[in-house]
Image 1 (cartoon, rainbow, N blue to C red):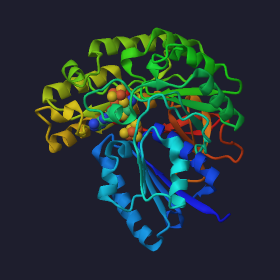
Image 2 (image 1 turned 30 degrees about the vertical axis):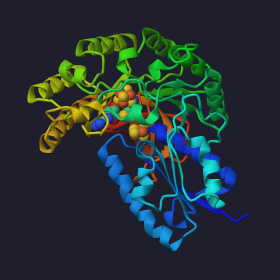
Image 3 (image 1 turned 180 degrees about the horizontal axis):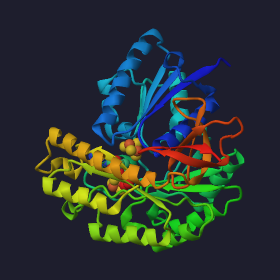
Length: 439
Ligand code: SAH
Ligand code: SF4
Ligand code: F3S
């Protein structure tokens, strides 16, 4: 059989990266080998995200690039998968007829049969964006690409309908995988050499609520006990249903990381209500206090959106005060992006672009200051770091993460291997990284 090459481009969140690993694993059954080189590929798949307009713009740019390649290589097969595929469906092919297939977010296990049909020219185009919630992609091959952590989806979809967000429309309703399937996948990952897993879901705290057999706290306990596992992470937690049991399990477990990513999105009750986030500033603060009391040395990170419709200077100042009070280790900050079909897109008082950018800058300035102050407290301390490998910019400088998910860099000494735990003395804390030396 001739070698066939696959170029997969993935945008968006970890769930999309996990889907990509599954599609690549499945396509190996047809003889496809991954390549980084788009020009060499016989099959190109863009696995897309549509959470913000900027994510979509990038994809349209790439779709244009592939058009030229198809002209010189007519047998090239070109597909779009992921959230934009789900949202746009056949519109994508109307707009760009050089696309051969569009598969929605619930169809990753159909990538093999789809590509086969196209290889044999049994059909000209395939478009399938049906979301059948009973259908889950079990028993698929996985081509894992990460060095440090194995992505393990525990549930798909979202039921929360935050008013700005497109995800519930493109990922469907919440459905949980069976605990035994998850544990088996964790065990497989450990067998492959992974010492860390990250459990994925849009809202992991509601794991099991759709089939009410195992709660997220119980699942964490089960994963914590898998032999050979050293670190367990999970994302993302919705603050409205982070239970006391989960906090208790994290407090008492051996391997669950002391890192809470708890996206608050905003710091004023008026905006939180308009966003349909369900909690209040007060209940969120109480939750943070509870976490800090139970697990004092944990880190806490968040996501924030500025420029939501109706946001005034007064609201924004409330947000800044809120940040000063909570003092997150890190915050991922976004400018509100209007997503058609969501309630917030129809709201009056959309905020002007210039104002949004100005607020984002002020927000980042404050959070960067706080992040740096928090990291400065770690100066001169010795931290346990799981080795990932050479850093992006310098082969001689290696990187890894603490269990609180802080990125650490140190000069490579020739002996450490990915997955090892090393002790690093921090000597140069910065806003986004801690630089140090091996002890
Ligand atoms: N399920 C996860 C988030 C998935 S999207 C959660 O609820 O935490 C990741 C982040 O993108 C969100 O936390 C939010 O901060 C941001 N986001 C979602 N929709 C957005 C929009 N329309 N504009 C800007 N940021 C958005
Ligand atoms: Fe989007 Fe809200 Fe669901 Fe997160 S919880 S995916 S922000 S709707
Ligand atoms: Fe994007 Fe879909 Fe994830 S919209 S953020 S890839 S769930």
